Length: 453
Image (cartoon, rainbow, N blue to C red; front, side, top):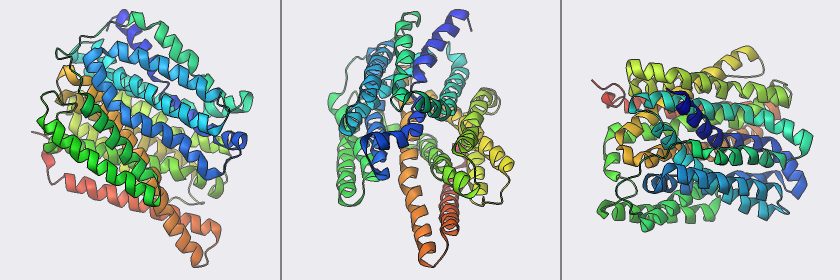
């Protein structure tokens, strides 16, 4: 690795970190509620609007990078993101903020859709896993720093600062982008517009179907199913498809992608319900709870750093499987946490779970990218981000439903609020651990998926 390559990679990582730093927005939720006189439930649209836009566009963005250049798409994403951050910060009302969050989702999709492939293009193929490990570590550092930095920014400068603070990062990376070499583009420069529209429609409708309650969710789900079927038929007949769907017919490719959804589903349950356990049951301050939660992403930094060595020694598939087991073990143990649980033990398990996620994500990204030709690296790396988002959104909806059902039943049976919370917490964590454990067991019916000869 030469100094010039190091500098180019640092520029790509500088621009990419604006995505995980969106975790700082969580710290601004109470202030946003107060600023726009919102009820607590309404704040979810700040998250949903961003994630739906991001997920709808990220794979399309990866394909744009394959065809028109990763640096060009990455730079466009930085500019769109910077404009969106300004629009969010200057939002005069809640509707404006949500529209700006949609634009932000599009901008971040352009950044993340191109960034891993752009980073990989800087180095020879022999350095692929090591570059992915550095990218994963930078992403985890952003997730670690985001909540604490967000809280400090909100206290000092108001909720708008969680958006304004990322403008210099985006523009700084854009100004330095000329030092990043231009990667070769795919020889076939045809862009499948119809396939892109169908892909964006079904992915966005799928996430809205998961997130929306009642009839609206059903309609979105039907739209997702219809456009997905249309997308599959069209792409199967296309000479220049967005994604080569034949790959998903093999367990060696489809199972790791399903596993990625399950890993991020399992990992997010800690961030969904953990803060309530730490503050309301263990009696920690919000700041202390935030630092405790940050041990998960901190563990992911270590997991990402270890991944390149473990993949080189044992292979990507066994390393991904090991990371999946560590993550599952953390959630299984966490299902038994209560007011009497030692905080140090909780912190250790959170770090172990994060280590597992970091290890899995790098190994999984490596095997997905290796499965596609170099000219489709944008699509491959975008797919790894799409599965992450799908797992998080599914957990936010399903995990919350599991918790509420058990807590409501306990309250109906006369349990005190604290005891009812623990009932719901244990049921949600236990159900997620059991479901993911069953999935992992079923994947072992095809052991070569994880342990090829």
